[in-house]
Each structure stands twice: as structure tokens, then as C-alpha cells.
Length: 421
Image: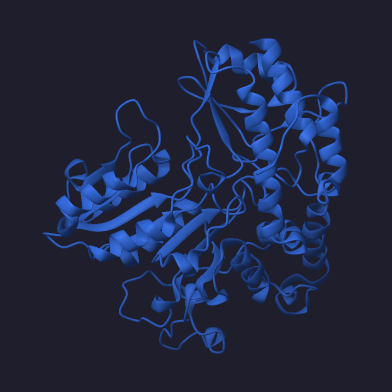
């Protein structure tokens, strides 16, 4: 437990003692019209650009200009194997083995590709469990999968709901669902960190519960990758997918990551879509060979990857590799704990934090429910120089990320919120 104190000097002291404080200078911080840094608290939506990203992308632009097609083999970072540069550092970030991870496609596309393989419904076992307040794209995706297989999406979708007058999910309620309907459920697909509440769910507990009832278990880790220690391999999950433009700072709409547990690495009985980038690398360019599937997560690739997007990902995850998730998470817990401490000084009659108070059950995001407020409060906060995120009906999401947010950022954010309230 950390002991926090009030006052600006405490925040400044924490920043002086923070061994990661210099990393803020490695990112472009948005500024107001007077050239002052804004307080950026939406890394949970779009991470900031590392300053080295431009050089990484420019390297590929230069090699394309100078080498043309030969860049696939002769570029400084040969394009043919570029995705392999990302595999090990990304596996370290999500707690997986390299054979279990690949960077490809975008998030919802990856979830569909995973469901093409792992959602194999029968007439009696076809239902899908998701959390009731899943990110909308996940809900749309699983509903469309149900319809694709000829099922009624309203009958086939089971929602894991919080209890009355609560926001957080309770594991006992999931157990009840599985005890009552487990033999009808083909797939459990849950957001590892809920986008709205910031609740970090126990992936291993959910996986073990699902497997006990014969269900496939997968996770959308969009709000977890680069934010919490996912430990995907140890969780035992069958699959997972995540975007890279939030905490992984790869730029808007950039490529996504995908995890397939190693126990599925050499399975050729799994239904899947295929393309030439999932074919044996040694014979890929022989063109006329029969399909020879790559083992591991790479075997779910389809197309040669977009190098410029991968260059932006590499620029960011190279920074992760410098520090390591353990140090980032240690700072994150301390920084978010400080944020929570200051917010609580505002009084429960004014605000309520709906994110779990246990640091093990959340990442850096705090979701703040402001009583008797509407979006005008968020607009005033924006005018005061804070970039945060509003979710209807009355929640402000703020994520002090350990890479580029400081204790002083958090202090000034709460002071501005206090003044507006």
C-alpha cells in the first residue's frame, strides 16, 4: 500500500522519484491554442504517438522509394518477415508464448476469424455468453455469428449481467448461468477489461469455469493489452484478440493482435479461412503447391501485412520492451491509486467511482460517475484543458497511463474537476 498526501508538492515529489518519468518526453503531447500541454487522459481510447514513430515509418517509406519490390528482402527491416519482429515483444506484453501470438487484421475481424474456427455450434449446443455491457462491436459480431449459423440471435445470446443497482460483474452469476445452461453454451467471449467500468476480470477463473462445462472460451483484450498483466497462456483461454491503438500507441485504426493457445497450434482439424500468408513460409512462393498450414497463431493469417502500420506498432512496442510490463504496471497501480485518493476527497455525495477499488481488479482507467451531471460537465472539463472521455448517461472515463501521464497531470485534473463541480 502506498501512502498518498494532498497538495501539489507531493505530486511533484512523486514525479521526481519516478524512474519512468522521462518517457513522457518520448511522446507527442497535444497542446492547446496557446502551446500549453493538455492533460491527456484517454489512452484507453487512442494512445499518444511516440516521437520515434515518424522515424520508424519513414524508414519503410525510404526503403520503398529506393528499393521498390526488392524491399521485401533488401529493406533494413525486410518486409517479408516484418510481422516476426513484433511477435516476441507482443507475446511478452500479453503473457504468451511466441507461437501463440500474431499481429494481423483488425480487432473485430480477428474475433470473427477466431469464431470461424472455435465457434462450432450444434443444434443443441449453440449459445454464446457475453457480458451485458460488452463493447457494442463484440455484441454485433456474436449476433451476426449466430445468424450466420442459422440461429435466432435473441435466443442464442446469453448476457452475463451485473446485479440490480450494481455495475460490476459477479462470478457467481456466471457460475449460475453455466450450471443452468452449460450444455447449451458453445462459446464464452468476454471483454477482459470492461470498456465502461474498467473492471479487469479473472481470465483464468472464467476459462476454467467455461472449460468445466465444455465451452470454448475467448477474450476481447482491447482494454487490457498494454494496460494489465493478461497472462494469456496461463489463463488457458482458447483465443483472444486486441487492438493496438489504445494502450499500445500504434495509431488510429492500426493492426490488431491475436492469441491462439499452443494446445491448438498444430491442429489441422479446426475449421478456418486461409490465405497465402498462413501457408508454409518455405514453399509460399512456389505458388502452385497445395495448402500447407503454418503452425501456431501465424496459421490464421491471410494476407501479406501492411508494413507502414506494423512500423508504427514496432515503434511503440520497442518502448514496452525497454521497460517491461512489470515496471509499467507497478507505476500504473501507484498512479491510479493516487488518482483514486484525490477523487475521494471530493466526497461521495458528488462523485462515485464505479471501477473496482482493488488494484488487482482494474487497470489504469477509473470510471467516474458524477451525480446530477450531464455532458456539459465533460465539455467544461475539455475547455479547461483536460482530454477525457464521456459515456452516457453520467460517466467520465479517465486513464492515467504510466508511459506519458505524471502525478502532476493527475493533481491538476482533479483540481480542475473540483473547480467545475
